[in-house]
Length: 389
Image (cartoon, rainbow, N blue to C red; front, top):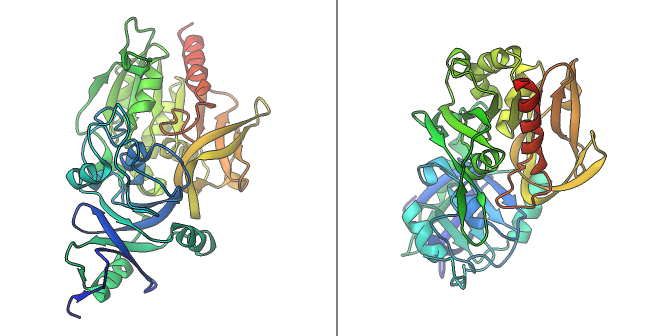
């Protein structure tokens, strides 16, 4: 079918089931395919759009007003790269507003253009969210054409032909290509991010698509960090004689990345060193310990998720971003469940009873989100103290 003009529209979202949402194009021009999810966070859109865990996904923001704080050079979560290794597209209820914040150095629309993020505004994000809740996360193509010309049939066909995230190893593209040292610490008002002065620990972070704030939170415990590629062998990691190893967040199917990562994680666990997993790192640690992971219908994406820490009895409000989950019924001995989502009862944390090894599904570093779970980095540091003794 030839291109056709949709009156008044410069942007569309074409879904694999044939449904088409039209509105106002924002950001980069062109089209991108991905899994459509929704995020319930009220703030932190720049951090969300630069989180590598959103690779091959199109994010619909449930909060209607986006753009008021603009963007800046400091609030990037990605170590390097652009939309190819983070969120491919963004959907807004209203056209992004002009920035009104002293830290802003760009408006959202211009920033999205430079990064290659395609946006769609002026659509009913509440209806889209409801559809995802009822029917799961669909495959879709988001497109922006200033002329309003779209080949709808071709866009729908592209959405239908996309293979989806199941079986997809995206960490290999999101990871760093070479090792590097990180020493930036958490934000210290009003002096911005700090620098690690006196290291207490040597930590290796396996990068499956790590967020900057995970590294900052870890460095703030006194850890000198060496970040290594996702496919680094356990022997090479242990040769650095670290006090602990962190398995980072990242995109894609944990079972696919686990084909090469799980055997190495098993060796790290067997070494007796403290191991801490976050998000994708949590899922692959579970696989290494004998559990299973499954694809979720709508996933968890937002900064208002209630999680209970079963070891303390406390309920925390946390940031989450995942479309796969650990099957809690598959957890073998000596693995214990430590955290659980109070939204749907899915697993949110595990630990070994006989080794200094634990992990969580949520993002304790927040960014965006509340810092209720920031203590987990101190828990990891405590395990490293015991290991060093």
